[in-house]
Image 1 (cartoon, one colour):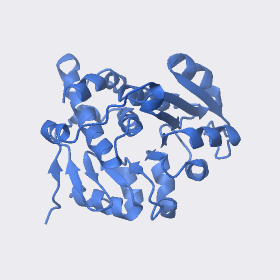
Image 2: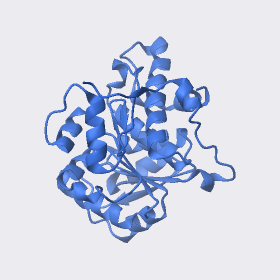
Image 3: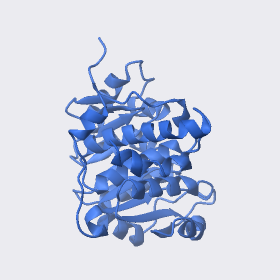
Image 4: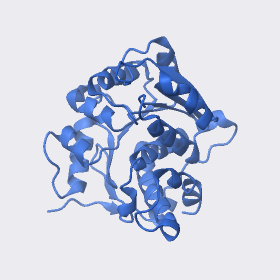
Length: 287
């Protein structure tokens, strides 16, 4: 029997209103995005700008050292820190005290966008988890999920506030098998196994078995960089005070509806991930 989940609708979200912080940018939290490589800095850019569009107050980006200067120009709102690289341009897992300090001070850390090497990502993930405070919220995406699949004990039983955002390939690694057709059930299994909220293609689940599904996403969201936008959206919502389940549900809806808003201009499959960014604030504000 298929698993039961609640459909994410505007009415559901209006009854689950996002926190509205008052005061300065510090009240909206600090998001740190850790990712990128020499060849994939755009993933960090997309995730970081999405976090700001979703309401984060302060943005920090940590990416491959060779890309830091260009990122700082492309995202002038952010503090950008360069991390050591391997010979192949991947971010190394031993970036030292600077990253440790940034992680320790962040309210939300998103790890994964643009990372390209599973071994160095595993080292980087361990460093982040060691430096992060117990109340620091985590968003794990892309290669960070592959690294987690090799070391589930990093999260399981930790009680950390974390959201995993796998695609089907990443879900296969996390499950140790091919996902079945019932993605509600697969999300619930992953949430229980890793002790984290899970957002799997619009199917949201929490470790205590609650589940939701977003039904308005369309084929256009299957474009390069779209997952990076979703991860940053999640991080921004967590930063402004949403809990993991709430942030995952709101992010799934805002991601999907932002895509719908682009269809009249570009068609169902013609828009770019970067074009989702400017739609996010209005989509959230008009729920």
